[in-house]
Amino acid sequence: MYRAVGSRATAEKQPHAVQVVVAARDLEVGTLIRDADLRMAAWASPVPKGAVYKREGFLNRGVASAIYEGEPITENRLSPVGSGGGLAATIPPGMRACAVRVNEVVGVAGFVVPACAWTY
Image: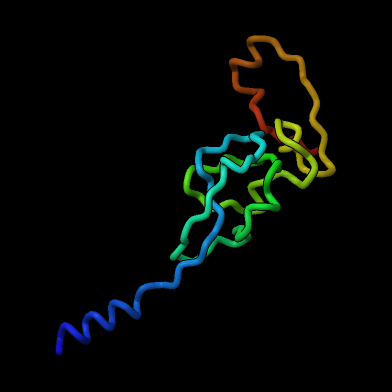
């Protein structure tokens, strides 16, 4: 009786898995997503907000934030549709990027760092 009740309780505790799109390999910032970069995987824990269930709408989108192998693909980690890849895709709408000339002293001193946003 103990085994029957124990196995029944274990079966009821197993969460229902859903199929989500995950990264098939590590995707660096600026990478354009190709079909080989994605795969479907069963996800049993709570599904992250914005997780993708179909791979079609995310091909040829740029990666705005690094995505690691096996991590679910979410909308907030990708660049807007049509913006392509590269660093230009990581610039938020309404913002601009510009080059700043510095010398070796300023660069080594840590005053200039990538992804630094100044608001005036």
